[in-house]
Image (cartoon, rainbow, N blue to C red):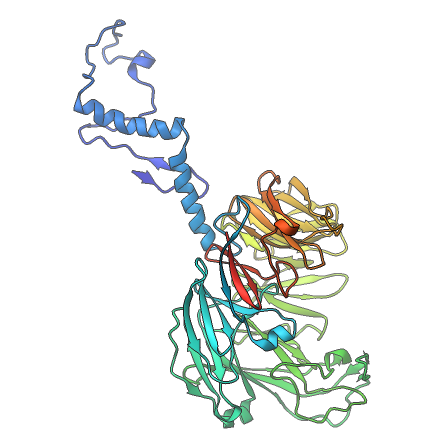
Length: 557
């Protein structure tokens, strides 16, 4: 019987002999080998007293399992390796950036053709907007919400949406992966708009009408996080003086500061019932004029007031980027973030000088753009838990082992600091040039990308450098390469390398040694990337690697 090992430990086999009173260790030395006999005497060579006949049932029952164990321990070890590989593959299905196998060059395993994402997002250069919904990839395609099986590319289901659909939250591949338990879809003309909720199995809730009166009272609706509809509108007194010296020309050149404006109230309602979940008001704060230009081209895009073409200022303009856990507000005087639970973050940051992001462990981070960058860490409830020097970066790909690790990246500087998730320092290391990205945390190794394009493998516990790979060597066209994405199967790290001209390739590195296992470049590369920059449309779902493009999706394996 095999017992599950501790993380990183060996598999243990218990051998049980039905007819034996005491279990015997099959690998322990025998009495004959040690010279120890119960009565203190040793049998002479050739003496068979006490031995079992070759055909004895007891000898077969005892020898068979021992032989099996010895075949595994002393032979090829394929049995244990197979079990470990299966366990590792299952682990990779559950972690971020995990792919079942990147030990050999990838090829196309399936292809689905059709429109991916809303046409508006593609036209605005945001790429194909998709969402990971359970173990399927979901996206708008024409007048339907389509879900693809990540392993086979087969359509798991398709839901008709109606006129002028707007589904979310979604994320643009290459900008950030959005994973959610439900998708909220709005559809229909303004006077007769309704909302539905779609689950991972394609089951759709009954439509709920979005009352025009609610829109007048609370603002235009948008699909929100955690099964909500979010609305926003400017509230409070409209200032008539003291606007400041901010101005923007017809060419979009802005200067000065807008010092007065209205607050912004955001309301989240349950998409199915319409019941209010939370309401938050973000107070107006003095803002650089370039944050108040009339350029917000999405829903929630303006104040409804006349725009002065001489100045191009719109103090009432605002917009938002909505993910599975955040409503990221931008606009004149109201740049901030609200979590899916209704907790505002970043209101202390001067508009246009910083931001707030979510971490996969449930926490959040806020930071400012300055020479002395300082990052504040929050837990899942939005409570401050610590601060670190530099920008806090989490790994793009993990194998699920080891403690959660953040890297503090400082610019300028040639040092990187590793922190626990609460900001407790673990080690500080010299990496020769600025660290820019935390590519992977795999098998006790932190794989980082430096500003010079070097990829370095550092010991996760000590920060000691184990290997370096130069990813900047020019490709066949003479263009320098840079690493843009990373994935792992728990043994190897798959790097997506781009040349800045739309070409992309792949390099797989052994995470222990840093040696190149295989690579694809130029015409040999399996990546398509039509309509996008190289492989920016790659994402991992349930251990499967997918390339998402505006005109289709492919499986790679």
